Image 1 (tube, rainbow, N blue to C red):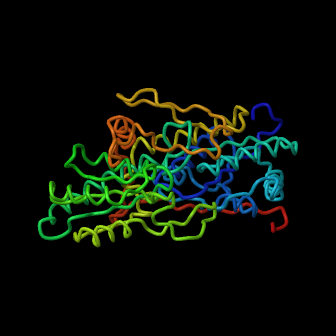
Image 2: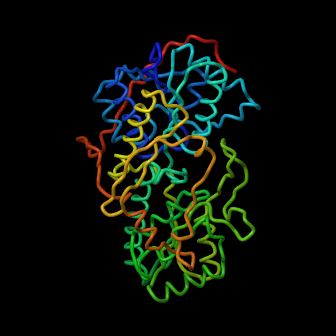
Image 3: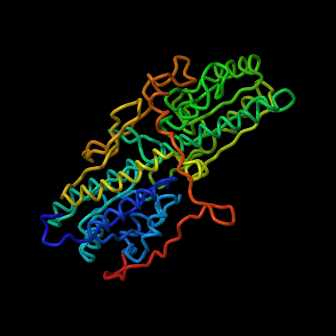
Length: 420
């Protein structure tokens, strides 16, 4: 941007499912841009705001409000599950984005999301070049699923991992207390459509054959009903109870999701209908044990009170780096986290090409899953443990609740005709 006649403005957009720390990334973007004298607009409700020319002027927010984003969960500017089609299929949407950018002198587009968002940012970088509009497109990593390639971890994952490990430990203590006369099996269903990173994090709750979770069900391993039930029965007999953590994307032997409900979401992904009750039904019908199951759903990705300090710091760092890359005139890149040491845990941020990240998926390596398919290895623990370290609690108000940020989100005056 230093080589341009006008530095223009930055447009920041949040995409897909939000996390406990995505607003820390927004804070990193806005505070860094302000320090450089650059103005930041935010797209209301993600890419939809960009298409609709529904933009937010972040300069109307106080420094205190922006700083408070660092400890506020959710998406401060709104997000959306909306996937742009290919340029050949629906070129008009991409051209509309360029029209909006031109109208408001936006020269940097920062898209904060996962695989699909990386793909959109990459496509925009290519289209703007072909249309002769100077634009830096930077993908900013975010996904609780931890499935972006190249980056060592994805901002948002460390906090979900911490929440999951804590919840597994605490719930297991409850079940262990009541197992003699009550619940024998507890099933916790966690997010993870194709990659079992979140389920694996539950393994940090304990170590050793008798420590919970006793069984982890990964989407990387197809479900074997007979083996699973035998494992549950043996665990209950030996330990007195059994804690099961299941990834929502668990596959049946035929390759279909065990809990597929039919239908597709906005990204074209299969709708999953709830795995925990399916597993619980098997335990009830085949073994006759009393059970309980839980699906934390949004709780696991919004639990800012239990966020990992490492995750918060990394989320802020990628937002800061994204602006720095744009200021250097870099394009079609993403700031990724590079691990330089396990013990002590050290990391840094480096740029990676969006073309090598878009539409690719990082699954759990086989070396992270025990031979029986139901636990995590020492290698997995070395990878996961540093990511959940440190506390970064939000400030609390007089009412005993966290004091989260509330923004004005003042709209930028529109200049174009409505789209669509």
